[in-house]
Length: 489
Ligand code: BG6
Image (cartoon, rainbow, N blue to C red; front, top):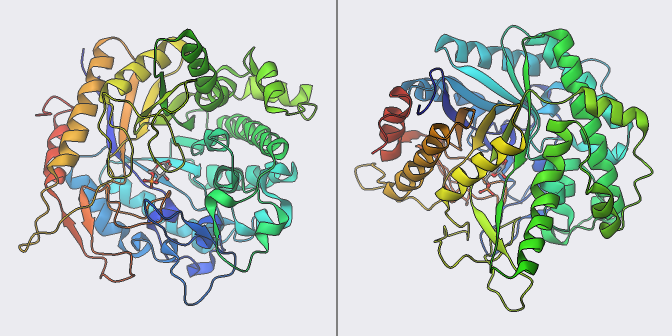
């Protein structure tokens, strides 16, 4: 069997990277609103005050807030039956701890979901895609404060009740494991809303890679997110037993660079820390056996984990496991190995793979390997690839056409890899490509790192009129969706 009947085909976006309208209709500031742009060699920076002369890409993004009807019509034209998007927490609770939700924000998503329904597109909603309200960072210290678990649950309860007949598929936290991806503040800020005091009050831009972090605080906050996620799963099922509530991790597949057994062991450690820790907790409902020694190695005191938390985590396991997959990396214990410069996930260079202009190593076989490995590790849950895509510079021809054969070639090989995994029995239920419409890059803040099947006329210098146009890949993906993955070449 190749792709099963009813397979979900679509694309994925995040509110902060596409909506814009960053203060419209009562929305409050959230973390990405404080970030300036960069590029492959220039890290993004954080500047907490909104400097009127600085360019904050998320403030207007691609203005999806005012273009969503046109965009959803284009998605429908491609034959989608699923659209992954996030609700921007700050549209619903502008300060994170407001007594009442913001009705204008709720109404916006009502209308967006109605638009999806018009075309029989199932929304898949990420509850928190790096969009922690800024006031939660400054007033509460993000998820390092247990009080934020309740604020998150109040937000969940509000949207679960409001959209209980409009949304079936939910994901609690986007890439919850970003906090485990190396040292530094970016994972803390994006994933956990945690910042050290001196950075919060910065008056000059700070490179994201230079943000300070405190490992003890990171893992306490991550644990609080596990509890928050599990509580959300339990609550969601009480509100609507038909809800399918999943987790989401950034899966960066790692290989040992050499057959040296020391590299094999290093690879296990790397995969455990970066990929497996969060999934094991959220899918199996318990910290893995090796967690104690891992925390010891990291110097993290785990006395913050209570028996009550563990019982909640056990009860609130997810209904399906989802992940992003863009690339693979290598690891070695040998000195002097070459590395790639992939933002957020610096890793060892694989001599057998080519990389994108941003250093992300292209590895479709790695996707098949990952799917088959995950199906063995978590045999009781369906899987879904909720992000996969190719960031590239696009050239607009004089007649307006965009011949993105490099993107088609990336997707072809990855769709084929998923097909093989399905043939081998992997319970894969869906695929949403990342950035089906060009949007702001999370890692670099660029528009120039384009992922879309749909081009958006918007540029890093702030020019462009937001006009949408179809790239060659649009027509290719349409054939894939309409044929349920039978027509790939
Ligand atoms: C994932 C995130 O890490 O990768 C997205 O969930 C992000 O928000 C995507 O945009 C691609 O990364 P980038 O840095 O190219 O935008």
